[in-house]
Amino acid sequence: AERIYQLLAPGKPYLFFLIGAFLCPAASNNVVAGSNAVLVTALIVGGFSLLDARPLLAGILLGVVIFKPQYFPLLPLALIAAKQMRALIGMAASVIILFLLSAVLFGPSLWLNWINVYLHPQQVAGVNATDWGHSWDDSVSTCVSLLGAPHWVATAAQALAGIFALAVTWRAFRARHPLR
Image (tube, rainbow, N blue to C red; front, side):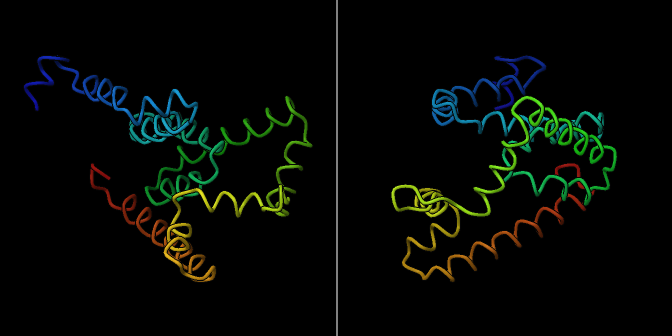
């Protein structure tokens, strides 16, 4: 594999990786479908790769991930565990600026409506949007539900998976191993 790297991208093996990633059917389908998984991945990988060299910029990049709130909670936890306070400050500044910018551009009602929908999911065609989403996603609770478990078991499994993710993130970033 190293020889292929040197032939296709001498001195820059990451280019070979990037080309392969974008030629991967899942990545190209993701981009064509308008999904943002490639962007989220680039922000997270870019942020953590800059963590030691440019912590403030790393935090700013990680803060932009706030547009995908389901990924966001583990990021500040990782920075706290890694004792990267400058990156945490950059992340907080990025989040606050994006929040204020969106409130100025789209009005504060956008946030108030989002909070209302989040706290009080609306019925659409007789199906709660959150319930509909859980019927089609690949979360732990959905998979456990599809196996026939009762709702409370699926919810408990999702909570355990969340706790496990928190613990693994803390452990991984607390370690000073270069491959964390």
